[in-house]
Image (cartoon, rainbow, N blue to C red):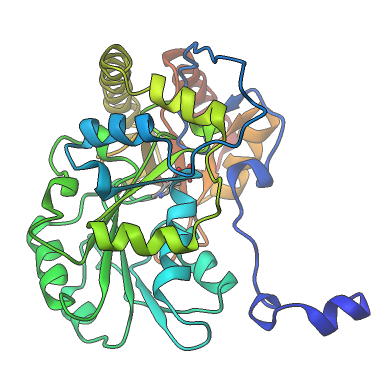
Length: 359
Ligand SMILES: *Cc1c(COP(=O)(O)O)cnc(C)c1O
């Protein structure tokens, strides 16, 4: 390593592997079913004036629009550069360098641990049970954590956490930790919505995003929902102008009544497609479905996943290898795309399975 870097690099980062986002791992290809993005590319326009001025730190109209969508008050919301920034802000605001810990339940979203690591914060892991439910007793046995990250619907398993389990965790940590419930996929499942529970559980924090159901991953816009004092604390840490003016404008347009109706129609389409693809995968030789159907992706097991991935990549079809995740050996995750993309995925898969001789 370069001498100056090795002398000065933050010691917490020496062993850190950066988050392997779908975009970092693989570029090219024609069909991107590896990042749980929406296949819909909706047209939107921005007003191209007044860019000589700094934007508001928290664009008021956008905050109000999301507050009304999520049915919470305007002072319960922080707009961030994607939900990912919300994760980092929570860690930087509520954990002390080299002293505090967060708790996560793998297999789950990778950024909780990576954000903690870049901030010099320790991560305690309490794995999900075999059926991907919370190990509540295991979680309660851990004391001295400042943040508990739960993800429901969970990425990459597509499963919802049990409501009573979440409640039990919230109550257990009522006086000791914030429970951060990541609802990045909430629009794909009508069963739970924790944003409306902020008053009941003062230690609840909810993460949301426009990247998945709202089809705006390129925008980088997310929301942290919490009680007012929590939001005020996060405002101490956030950059002075985190949301660029065009992002605020576009995000606001995505939250008009018509745009929300369109989003719901697109979610319905994707969930019908999900059922269709799940059914086809369930009948494919050698393939075992894993996890649940509460989000816009499907997790499955295939013993020769490396060869299958290779074949798909050669044909421009990118899906996501999840085999490094705890308990997910030889598991792959495919995002639900447009009907024609899903068809192309299924036909490549069937072609591979019949020709390969793997099975
Ligand atoms: C995609 C995703 C995020 C990140 O969302 P951004 O708003 O794009 O940063 C957060 N949590 C989970 C579980 C995700 O799958």
